[in-house]
Length: 456
Image 1 (tube, rainbow, N blue to C red):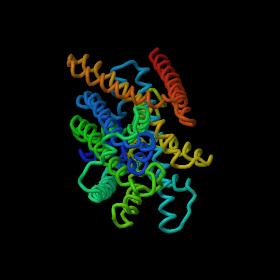
Image 2: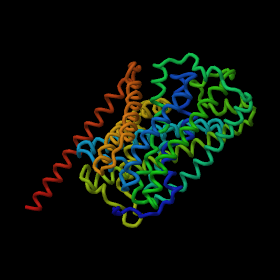
Image 3: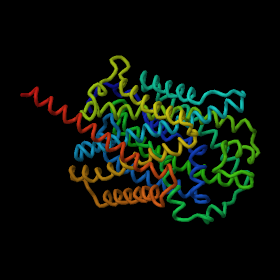
Image 4: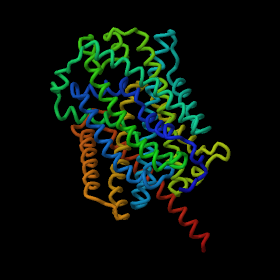
């Protein structure tokens, strides 16, 4: 593995897994995603998250075929481009960029929403939402620009604290209802296949980003061991946590007088119904803020490294493929990623789109990008194994199952046709992909022409 100007082997195994955990943003799911999934899947919310977890595990098995053999910055882009046609590699790169940027915008909207809620409830202070978003994104850009190790340590510590608080509340809810199963949830009362498919889209969004540790191929210690471990265990642990949260939230809201999908502060409701002190809900909201922050930071970290590798490979301007001389971070790529997050976020807020609507819309758009990249890497895995004469029947089965699962999720996102503006998202995503691919192909062609002229 060649060191491309980034810091070499500075992140421990725990710091490497912190990148994937932070991008998953475990605290965001119980507060924002579980209520949205419940609005579609109802009593089958826990099942939607279980199926999403199994899908992610299948994808992780395919990704780790590469991660155990090679490491470089650029996340899945480097795996796809190395073993498939260059155009397919560019498609994978743009899918990841859209996914990381859209995720950062969605989570930044969540950060704005919960900052506003806390400032109003605790201090009676009202702050223009865009200022909150600008402050959060700006600090994330600074940390990603400055030092990848500081970023990783911060992300890990913040997530451990916030997840621990939610586990305490979940235990309290289960204890309050006694040691028996919830019959309505176990029997999937009122759930249909169409409702489950709709819920799967956002359930998958809750888990995407588990692969982002692969973007640290240059900076992780013992990358061929630590990165595959991060890819596998971040998805499994987060998935199990989400299944538990989905079950306990649906259970805890029963008889509360509120509906889960309409609640603006679900943790406060759960704390009240479980007989826990009210300040626990406030602490979890504070934990959510830091989790949202660490997720935006992780998105910028991963997205910048995709841009960095694209710059080195000629798919974008070569300046993006240069590292900072002293910080040894992809500084220009970080700044571009930050602008790509803040400008759309600011535009949507200026147009009056509520933060929770931004979260749902951009989360769905991000899911399209992640699914595209996951599908491509799953197709590339058997090609890679066959080239090494290591392809087995079980590898083909794992690939086929992963593709089938993701195909079901994609179908659920477009059929039945969702109401506007969600019905426009597939076309917006397709337009962004085609525009990005055309731009990269033009730049790549100019680079090749210049190289040919120099040789002549």
